[in-house]
Structure formats: C-alpha cells, structure tokens
Length: 92
Image 1 (cartoon, rainbow, N blue to C red):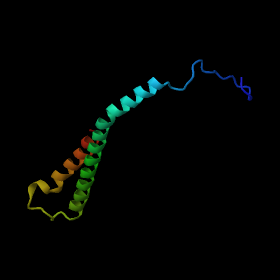
Image 2: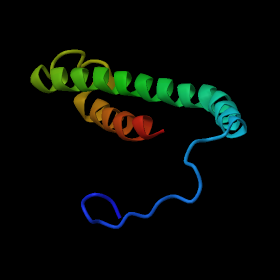
Image 3: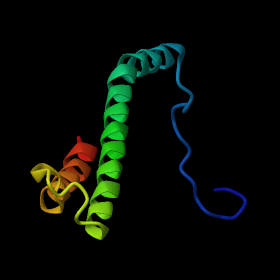
Image 4: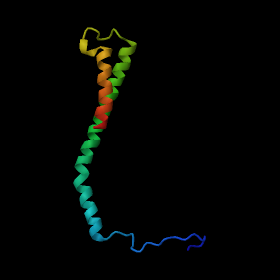
C-alpha cells in the first residue's frame, strides 16, 4: 500500500533495460530506418501530387473552358485521378 491507501502492485523485475536489450533495440531501429523513410517519402510525394491535382480540379470546376481541347484534362477525367491519388497513393 502507498500513502493514499491504494494497494499497488510492485514490479518483481526492474523495468530498466539491460545493455544487450538496448543494443538489440538500436540494431532493430537502424535496420528499419531506410524502409520507414522510404514509406514516409512516398506518402508525402503522393500527398503533394494529390494536393496539386486537387487545386487543378478546383480550378477546372470554376473555369471549365481552360484546356478543354485536351481530352484527358477535362474535369470528369481529372477528378477521379485526384481521388485515386489521394486515397490509394497516400495509403500506400
């Protein structure tokens, strides 16, 4: 029991990690650094691309005649690309 009268369970083993455990954790952290950075970089690149497409889609919604002679830059085709990039690109 402590000073407030609430019974507390004391740990039987010290919570401090030993030198070998800290070394193992450091090695695991070092081995996963590159894949984690690649995933973060990929996610940020997809987010930036999706944001640029969102700006273009918004601009096309307000000015539909802009670049209307290019078929793959119409609002109806760029909007699904924007949504796919935001959903699937960011989630990858």
